[in-house]
Image (cartoon, rainbow, N blue to C red; front, side):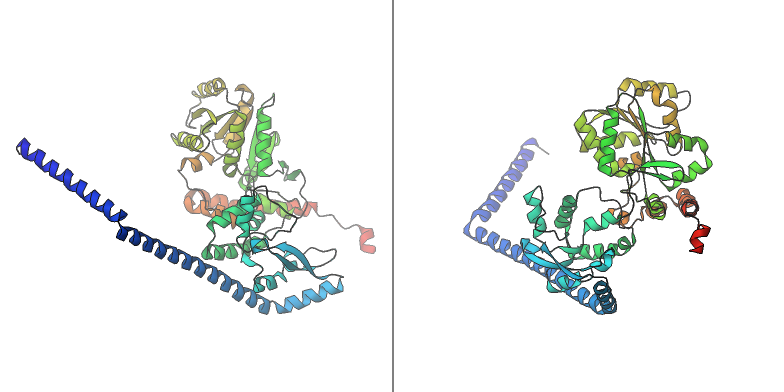
Length: 472
């Protein structure tokens, strides 16, 4: 094609595009264009308002229907509970609470002097739901004296009716309420919808079966010969940073049901656990064991959930973090996740876990020269914990932590179970579905083995009847 013809075509295209843009701009800024945009905005606002009103109406109808149905179905229980409360010197109390838009209302509850039956005590609150003071799902109804550090959060939660059930209540029962109540309320407010409320109501059924956490919760508990530091997630993260600033090195272990099973057969591993500076409870199995042995586990402090809290604390302290383990590329990808979310955190080094015995001295030297204060080791149990115990004093690292599959999760290689699965206490089943060939023995045989040992421990702790007791 001749050059002149090509240039003319390009000029024509440019003029056509320019004229089209001018026409669109003229149409947008003209009186008709402005009127068109206003009408579109009104239609959008009307549709959005209608959708919100429909959702609120559905939620209110759901509350009315379910509260009325439960009051009818539970009426025999309600009558018996009322009689029992009156006989025991209690009855129905009215407690001042703040409702929607911070209006005051009376929350109805049963009182049983000298007894605590939490689900039964809340039964009269169904009348509050029926009246419209509360919803089935929403932030916890707070007392007038309670306050929030941020007024923005307070007014957001006051924009909704308080609920019998809340996201914080479910996660507290599941031992995974690692965030504050205000943060979880804000999460609920910003994601609230009708079907989300239905999901919370469904998840509340298994949550109600969990221990309320009102039992014995000492600072340290002992399961099957292993001491566990009974800390919350925030306390454990702070303790690790404190250890990282100490003069001597410390080993930190997470223990779950599988770890206990391994320790029963592997005395070296049991010795490693008992010699660790900090041992943290991981998983629903340990929590269930605590309930059976009357030693309440305060929170499920697992490494995967801890990493964001630990990274925030390490970033603030200015300490260095070293990642060791996983397949080639896994630690690097996990390190990228950390750098993206905590850009000021110092990552002192990264190394995969596929090194031979001949390469081990080079790995130790690399970690030593990195000057890292905290080392995360992902080599799998019990290897990682034994490896840490063997080399703990040779690297100059202050805190060494066995973290299992943590790097796999944060690298994106293995997806983490959604929050609602963890709230149901079913993360173990989610992991089984991901890797059934590797996990079936651990979960379907190992869990029963662990519970068997816990039951034996329970029977040993049960006090024997003395002859004089029987005679009396």
